[in-house]
Image (cartoon, rainbow, N blue to C red; front, side, top):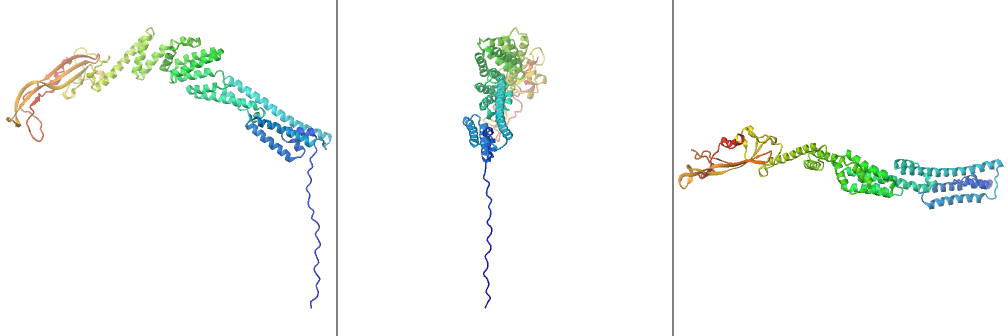
Length: 516
């Protein structure tokens, strides 16, 4: 038998667990004026004073969002109205939350808190007003610089217009945008210059904020384009049309228009003469009655022959001989009383000589002179006795051992051009029989001998005129004792007709008459 055991005793109950209860939120009582003034900062200062952190964070986030939206798009009226409504709602909400409450602070504390809130609201107001005033000054400065044509300074000034200015004064932000777009066009036009710059300047002049001196500058760009090789008719026509429009729309700029034309005439004197001459010719072809145009052009008339002569000389230097010849001839015809008339006449003579030389040289080297004789005025004269260097066509003088003093070494040494036609068969001389080959008369073949004939024409190179013409026949040695001939495979005998053999001395003798 086992001893009885006592049943286990239950554990004593644990004491109840004490749970920490959250402390209920109790807003801090704030004077309504202080709360409204704090929220008037648009940064939730009133909520902060009331210790309403969530409302304060919401106020700050909402205000920052709206300010960012306005800084990005200052012209957006709904965003600006929404910011005002947001500000009003915060002020009314602060009043609603604090109406009928009284701050627990002593009087001095309440006054200090109120002054801080009102001071913060005043500071925000002062910042907003200061930004508006600065925005107005920036826009005014940019407008004045733009009105003076100094868009670089205007752009620098507008660069100070920042996000705060856009938020505080949205209307000025729109003006800055218009001014900047107009100035960007003006700066681009100036950087491009010429006809392309003038086209951009025309686009700029369509802007409402365009500078009133743009027309004169556009005309100057078109004049520069004409001087730089542009189409003279188009660019000058557009330039003077622009000046005419400027006179009509801005009568007070008549003196500046005259100065623009005077400047064009001054620039012509420094330009390449042929470029200046093209513009001179265009100006002379106009039928203006506007004194701002006609008087400066008339005053510069003395420069026209200078440009014409300079153009002729430039053509001559560049070996554009036909252009130089035309310009010299025009100068001589139009300005016979000019101080440089004789110099131009002498220079034209030299140009004409070069043209003749080039033509003659081309004919001689191509062996075409005999078909189209031409003069070269500076060739050596064919006069006096002795040797007269000649250029031979149709006969190789080296093959007949001509004297060196008879033959010209170059075109510049040539007095005579000798054209030789031939050789050809001349008159019958004699017939002889030669043994050899196969013929109807046994082993003998009758061979007829003929003279050798050449026809000679002689031209004086200086004048291009024919100075002699003759025919020379060489009898040679007919019926030689031995007749040499060629055959292939089968000897059929000598040819039946043969030109007489001619010696080198006989050929040279045909030209003795030209060197006596």
